[in-house]
Length: 316
Ligand code: 8YV
Image (cartoon, rainbow, N blue to C red; front, side, top):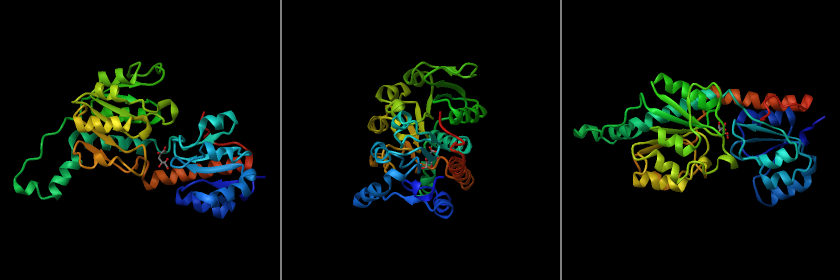
């Protein structure tokens, strides 16, 4: 049996999950840093078999090494790139995530960013609030959002839900994945640059982690071009953030809508003064309903693992 001192919470997690870990499991909580963390790991590291974490702070390389008997990682979030996935695979440590339950909300956020960015709705709202409209000034014209050619970088569950929504806006959908999806109604491109070249808006929906790091680089941004836009609801790491800042400052691309950043909760301060970028605080899945569903799925995975040694939604 897996007892409370074999389960550890790593980093902050959803309040419902945190409470259940205490009430139902009497589990341990890893101190954030310093001597306390070190002492904790010396004392409990060997006994820990299950780690519960989130997409923010996972079981990273160093921590995983200090947990020699770790058997499973239960992750809050569909993305689990904060954990050392390669080491977990080597050690046969399964990871569960929270797919499907958040797909609609993240896709809705992508559409919100898409409309906001092309139609400058955030800047337009600031224009009213600042009293500028009342002076008789006209807000500058924006870019049509309907009937665009949109490239989805990462046509997975979330990418497909974004594509479906964009189809209702009359958009023509293109995509790039590592391999072509047979039977997909959308146009495949063999690289991110080719996708950006063929479309007006590039929407990043790829999983984070080493395989996608820096995929949207200066070359891809040039391919998006001065009339094109970038939307990112995936992970900041998929985009070369310094190249993106420069591209927005120089007009290499027309604009961007960003829910995710490399060093969250910090967005690059150079972007704060730019009107051609919409900045959100990583809220893709952030609704009461979806966060409750994610919490329930995390707790179902933990319960199942404790009772039967099987996760319900392991990542492949
Ligand atoms: C979560 C996310 O809020 O699911 C993901 O991958 O990025 C968000 O839905 C985040 O992981 C929780 O920290």
